[in-house]
Amino acid sequence: MPALQDAVDDFLAQKCIAVAGVSRTRKNEPANLIYRKLHKAGYQVFPVNPHAETVEGDRCYPDLESVPAKVDGVVIATRAEVAEEIVRQCAEAGISRVWMHRALKLAGTSVSDAAVQLCRENNIAVIPGGCPMMFCEPVDLAHKCLRWVLNLTGGLPKQGL
Image (cartoon, rainbow, N blue to C red; front, side):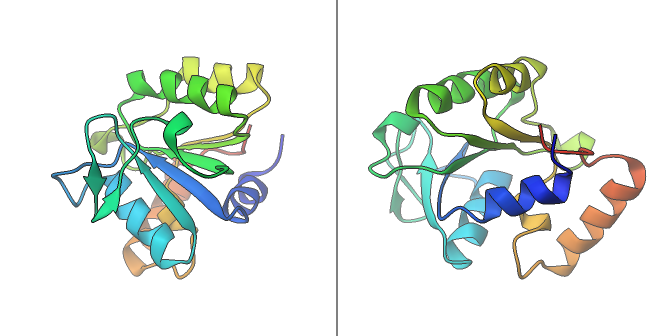
């Protein structure tokens, strides 16, 4: 299993990323912040939410199958109980990289043991925790601090799976 930084580097080396869990109404949701960050960093990014037609002024897709491009990786920033279905969609679409968002424990998590297991069973590289904004350059001060605190307290995954 690769070290966390190797898994992060591999994920962020991809050019086309979908972000599942974006909100049409709450612009400060983690998924929306991640979507904007990746877009600003030059990635081709697709928002995914089955209940939204547009997000952040862009067309939103109800599922991964509807995305009109070959997606290299998916950031899952949903409730944990939804993550398993999104991983199923990744397996069906041949998407081989998943990042399940988790920041502070009180803020909730997208990490699901069942979804992580499903990734393993389908040869999908998974980062079960953390946030892409803690690694995608340029990293803002708040996310640098968050990364440091989570690393110190054991809140970051030790490795990608």
